[in-house]
Image (cartoon, rainbow, N blue to C red; front, side, top):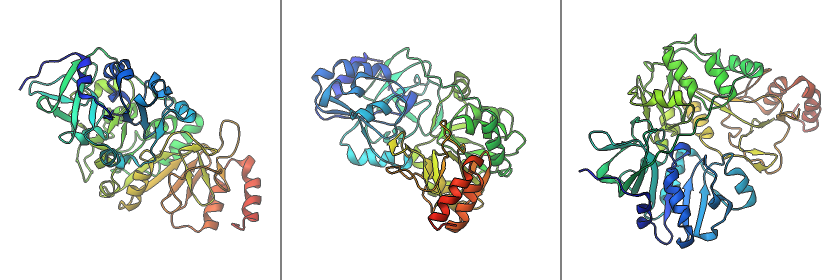
Length: 422
């Protein structure tokens, strides 16, 4: 069954009063379709857009169309953060693994609009750099696609047949590139502490940023690593091409590198195109702690913004002000905790840019705990590794002060004694 492309305006035929739109994460957003929808916003009636981590700023995010068209976020990005602060968008607290279930339960007859690769000779589109929550709606919701030649064709569980879509249009939209941040000396020291504790044959999860890049750069002497992660970045390409990552010791999806979305440079996107060694799966599978726990020697690596003496990690707020959201940090921390030989690393620099200690006696009022005290395993700064799992509060306090910046250790010790933690 071959369905020819239509105009992007055709998407409006499927949007009525109260329509709930599901939009993929990051580069999965169909920018031309969103342009059309915004252009018609004056005639819309309480249409809601559900999305994680938007990369494109838009007038509707600033509330320019009132209740006609509103945004509901599940993770704040640099684009949506100021709009949340101004109160023009909503934010739903959630674990990434549960976003599909939340969207499913709070929407009725949603319309998924997504970017996709051109259809193959069998009539299948690929959702390209995304599987996330969107792919779980295949066969369960209406779809309208925006096809661009720039979108790589990827494998896994993110294909949809032409017969399953209401329509599709073409565009020449580019894919946003996010160059990797170059690690400095401090990042490399942190990377060394983590890398030396990762055994050969481990399956790893890591994110994007200078410290994760530093950790990946320190893994080139390892053997037979596997990757099972929510985010695939350029660092994964280096390890796969070097033969360090081959997945031969994985319990699940053996020999395959598994993720749920990809974000990086053109090099990454070209590497993903028609690469059968890479599979993108729905986030409700990739981030499910029960799935993660089935891998032996699973290593979870995530970043945080501050840690208190109990080991609570505030990774989504700064001094009580929302900065991002939970994402998959707690998903992977719990999965690693249940893995045979698993390790959960939470990494951070010992001080913030203003010199304040990121190891604190108590979290700031209003700070949200992303990785709780009962789940936390190892905290890493440039001054070492604090092993917290199974340790008493007194032992945790001593270990955390030992990896705090030397300029703050005396004050932290004094406060710990006042709190009767030491």
